[in-house]
Length: 228
Image (cartoon, rainbow, N blue to C red; front, side):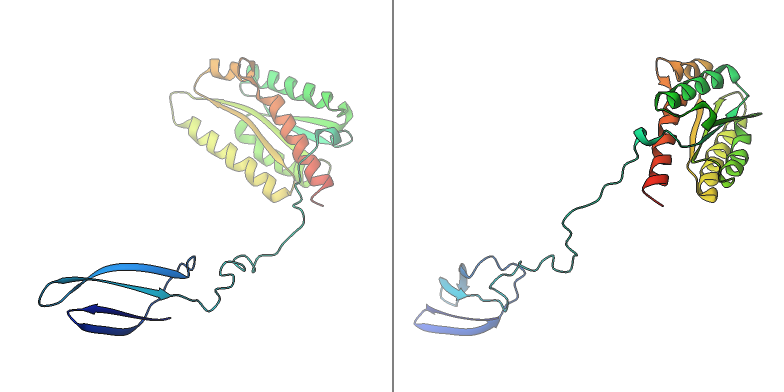
């Protein structure tokens, strides 16, 4: 934009045309004060400019014009009330059964609380948590179930065996769900000691088997009623 200004100093008139670029168009007129230096002394000069942009009528009017506008956003949330009539498989690791059995009992009780019938639940026992993923994937691929709940317990020992089992179980259950297209819920405890495991199998930290059942029903509902 072109700006012209004039100022008198020592009987001389300075006039100059400048081209200025501004990124902010929230103003039309600017008063600027600056010092001009001549051989005799400093002389204060002032000038005013009329600033005008090509689109000064509404510079921010079309800021979001490239975005599609919608009247409402649809939020999809699974409904536990719709769990009745859906079928579930539960894979349980027998190793550390003193922990996994109360977790299973908590899961079955929770299923029943939301109208899932006993005949709609199949429980498959496997030797340990490491063996859960391969069975979960087979069950998911069978087409008989809407979700697979995986229950196990891995307690840290004196060797690195703990890390190998935990990592394999976690990644395996995730892979089972991705490959089968059926929700496979990870409810495998990974604790430092037996006390922590008991706390999470119906103790003061709740029952992770029961929590897993809730997750399984919610995901099954979303898959069955909203994502088909």
